[in-house]
Length: 350
Image (cartoon, rainbow, N blue to C red):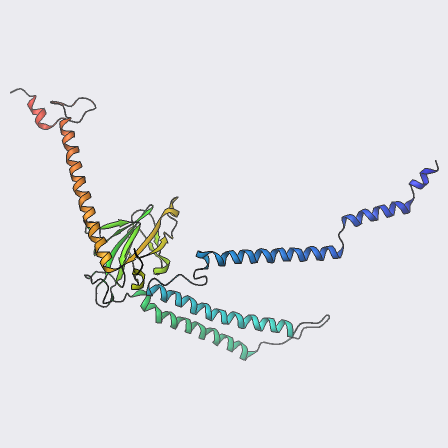
């Protein structure tokens, strides 16, 4: 009986409950430590992600602007992006600098009452005029470069000298025209001055890889056969949609330095419009070679196509001959080819 009061001692129970709460409730120091560890973990994660993006070849190539270097119009587009980014960066630094300065300089003290002030007329007029000036500068730079982006130049003297075409042309009216046709899920390139259906029959063509000579202005007629596609070789210029029933036009001119390597230089791209389940497989390639290599390749394509047509004609003739020999004399039996008119007439009574 003497043990019961000792077991019910309130002070001991209170101490026990306090110790349990202490185990469950973290202290202020523990909270601060956990917060610091979370921030460090987040900072480490951001550094790792940024490093991975910078080290990735495709991500770090022209990180803040489009890819360029393969054609003058691509270089002009890249220059416009960089000029716009530089102006935007200056505006950003100015605005954020004034904001940080104001927050630090005029930081409100505890219990302070904010001063009631009106707008500054000079300041408001200043930033309105400043924004208008920035827009005028950007518009001027754009229109200065736009003509060179849209209008193709003449081929260089050591480029391929070509016949004229019927779309937007260089000043001398001559360019190498290629018909770009998007199909699910492949690109077809037909080397013809006129891309209208039926007018480029017999013209040399290729699939997936387009071969062009350097220092030569190449104009493209871009269209689609089935659904909407988008032609884009980033280093050669902007992308253009390929739409059924409509033709888009663009151009590029690859400098001669890209033909110095054996086999030329290959520029890679891909359909940039979701066109179906195999959209990711619809890649595009442009191979830049010397004028002599291009002419040799084009003649070989013509020879290969001619040989394929002759072989197809022979196979067709053999197939027609075997079909004719398999016809029965007289009316056709069920499931067989119909009899020829001469066979049917021979069965009639004289």
